[in-house]
Image 1 (cartoon, one colour):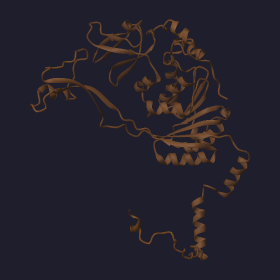
Image 2: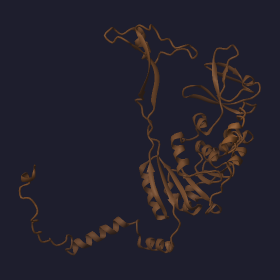
Image 3: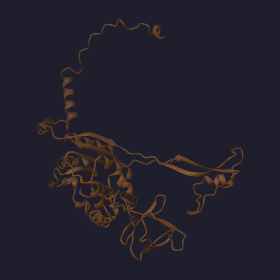
Image 4: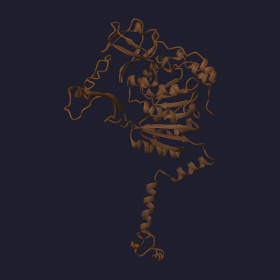
Length: 405
């Protein structure tokens, strides 16, 4: 069974002292009356040494480590770290002259995915959320990952299994292993994550991990090479997820899953579509020639200052509306996510596998089928003898037009 802990214990273990990446407030009481009477949790404030996600605008964010005496400079101005220390996360911080501003956001695995340093291609929020849900991760779960890469998924896995679970992540590139260890320590998740330098495709998962994992995630060029090792490492009813950009990888992996006792196999591809919701100034009288204000209102390259009020223009000519429309550019293909569950081994399964291996089931099936077909042709049994024609059905209409009405 999987280890579970009380929600209040989980929340206390994920306090600010455990690292800003996994921080949350203490869980309130479960009774309705106590939760209404309890005071609101205190605000989290920026402290010296904290990691802050500085949001400058839509899809524009930067990770910044706050240091006393430090300075953050961008096109919106120069900001002193000393002015941020003591401010609540989520606050809007202005320049000392009061002109430019940025938002100080608390780091989360979702925001970290947007601002991390790319050492490899990474998983993004849509794929990460489905992976964590389908692998059924809870506090106390043990999950194994290969390979570590840039650590985008690892941060989300650590949040799912903390504080009593563990993430064992493996990477064949030693340089990326060292970078990941330093990054996890700085972000406060090294207590829940163990990074190991190991080539899983070549060596498989360690023998000491046999039967210990609740879930396994594979992001490798040849995931089909590791399915046997995954089956030894998973507990019964454990979940395997494979992240593969090419459908040929999916095909090979599913064949190996079937050989090693996996069931409930499914493959998913996520394609998102985003919408823009904007305020537009529209002309009231469509029979009149377009005004300059109308043309400017629909131009993408025309932007008002960040603090400037919205100019509604002439009320007699223009009207303000909120419009929504899908973006012309859809989210492109990232990869195929293949999920499978290791079912408990039925009685006599080892003997069945041995027989299948001896008879070559699955391996040279097409070759053996071709041999049988060739042998039948030689013996003159290529096609069965023609059957006698069936007697016509007496209930069938000879002229369907008679029944058309």
